[in-house]
Image (cartoon, rainbow, N blue to C red; front, side):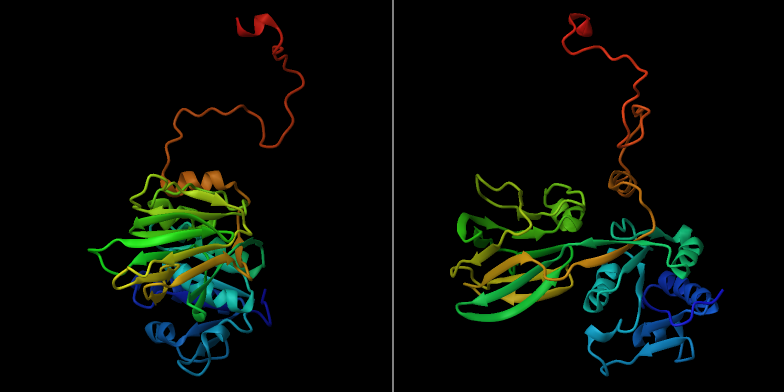
Length: 328
């Protein structure tokens, strides 16, 4: 069965031999099913591919990054979370779903593993997936009245010190009111999707993806009040670098895009204008993903024998909470 008029952007790490080997097999299977595949020039060169009736190569410099996935109905990424975040940049620009196949270590953003690749390709060909929307963050950097940079993030926005030997002196604002001042290594503002990434390593909580919230996590702050905070999804945050910061700081978005921050810069973060759409192959709960990715011990768990969300068994006589014998 062929699938005319379908095109997929394939993203793989061009310098990872494993990713290149897997990509070749995926391209062969997709094109055999009548699905066109788009590649970027560096990946096509690593794969030793040229333009053909089914393989389309985006040349360097001829189209802006925002148009890389134009005309595609899905972005498929082969790699770890870093490569998936790269694919998210392309998918977001044209509002198409993103599906990650994990070739890395943890791969929290991935929906499939390499061992399931054949079945994954078949489901891609059948459009057999659902789509979840994940909130993003929008960030503006200002110096006085001047806007000096704008960007976005799926996982987190982090403000970090530029010099290893110096602390970053910051004041944090929430919804137009000052919250606290911290001397710290940095401040992380995260989405629920990013709660298992950098924010987690800095001591932030894990937040289930269906929760809409913004996390504020100080990183190695020298302050009495320096706990991670969970804020409403429509909160507006600002992180101000004090003018005394010699050398300023650095703003990172998803660990991929950075802006140098001069002393006195103000970083404003709020909910993003456009979410990321993640293709889902499984309806399993986030708890199972958390256990699998972090190799959590669940030894000894028996459960209550009831389906999640199901009604209690009416044939079982439970002791009344008001019955004195209940605690006997």
